[in-house]
Image (tube, rainbow, N blue to C red; front, side):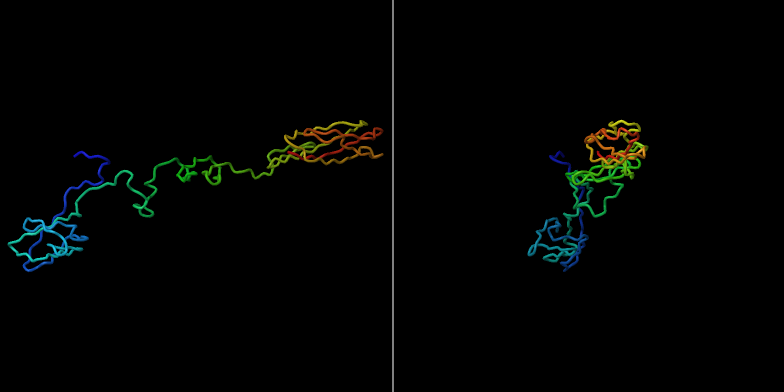
Amino acid sequence: MAYLGNAPARSFISFERQVFTIVNSQTAYALSHSVTNENDIRLVVNNVVQEPGSGKAYTATGTALTLSAALTNGTDEMYCVFLGRATATSAPGAGSIGTAQLASDSVTLAKMASGTDGNIISYDASGNPVAVATGNDGQVLTSAGAGAPPVFEAIPSSNPYTAYSAGQAGYITLVGGLIIQWGVFGTFGTASSGSASYPLTFPNNVYGITTSMWNNNTNNLYSLVLDRDPSKSGFDWYQGDTGNSGRVGSYIVTGN
């Protein structure tokens, strides 16, 4: 038979029927199935459907059936049909099962959809489940903060620096961007001024510079000083003792 809407969840085959053996002068009979009340069965006596209810032909509760009047064996016949005891096969309709119908711990891994090896289930900003993509070997799972799923990232380096160059003139770049550079400047001759270039040009700023002097000539030690503010690539120097040779110094400069 054709129908409108979704396919029925149950396909009824038949209702169960119970035939009673009449006992003279008896009004109490036992039902083969428990019922809520007399409206759960249809009672037929001598092929006549009886009216249920208190003060009517019969009442029922649990497995107890009570007649309002006794029947006679050999003369009367009686049977009932369980209206709520249909023999059927059933399957839930599509989209009809919610969390209330599921028992706790009833969903096993075998019932979950297959996924990619290594993926992790998380939730997006809308509270919907999402799969966190598999990371690479050696990466760790890090939080992206509230409203975003976690991500796999490389383990941060345990070294305090990201680059360095060792030597008489050199530099080291620390984690966070601080750069420390060093070198020598001055003259082994009698020049009164000159310039010095850092091993690296600072990308952003020069924070400060410290200089010291060592004298190649033990006589008349004069200062070796900066001629002006240092730039991001170097500085100019000046020394007033042109009569003696060997005015050499060293520096340490910081920036980022």
